[in-house]
Length: 318
Ligand code: 5GP
Ligand code: MN
Image 1 (spheres, rainbow, N blue to C red):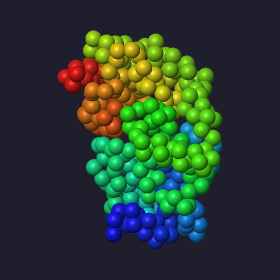
Image 2: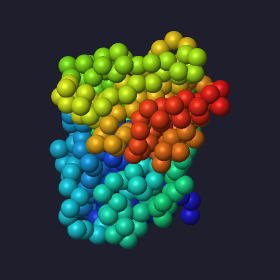
Image 3: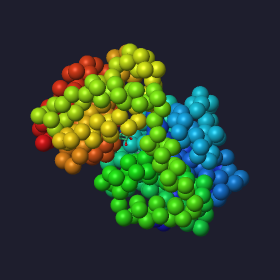
Image 4: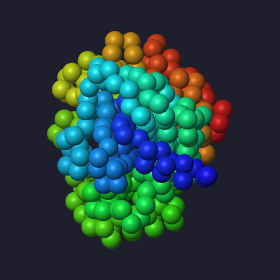
């Protein structure tokens, strides 16, 4: 039996299924989880299917099923099957990892090059644009509908920067076309979920741009925001989406780095590169990972020291 048959069989056999994504859920995480939820609700109406995530950013709350997501990881429960989506390793599941540990069976669907496989069945396709694209391969085309299409389309536009990044392939575009034919309102979804920013988000972006500096002779741009600055702008980590991508648009840069403080002395790092530097290797040095052109991690220590270390690592790769 091949992987597709095996996965479909496990979906058919499980009476209770939990769907997990990564901490700080993004568009692909929420989109793939809800795409699978809508699909499983359709093919297994009698089964218990539950998405559990840390939170759901407000701009994704319109997706069908978003109001049924559980944000509670305290309930003790053992599911027949645990689906892990868009998470490169078990740590990325955060406290939801307990549902992976207690489940009888587990399946991982992902596209992170740093994913070594942490479930019973692992489907990791580093060349896929998104986990939503990986997932689409496993769904029966006959069972697709607009609800599922909305979720998957959202995942794809967020992980491809609206079909811009190199990960966008012919396969991605063919899938997107198929989803559009199911009725996705593409213009509105792209504007409302990708480009539109709240006042707070725009001010935070402005602060990050003002504080940016060039390193590596102009090939790298870096910016850092402290917890005090987040308080000043009444912003939260959920308001940082798009900042590192905007930094990366600076002419002449190969690498963009955005750092911010998540708790006293704890920092989140985001890295993007243009065409040469493998930022997943750099992120791995900070317990993180991701993709060759987009990676992240977290560390405890001195942000200035880390900026200098990353600049050094970038120089070596250039
Ligand atoms: P971002 O910078 O937007 O948080 O993340 C960029 C990419 O790197 C995403 O695909 C994300 O899943 C991955 N990533 C971000 N932070 C981490 C981390 O701490 N560990 C791992 N393994 N991947 C991460
Ligand atoms: Mn993804």
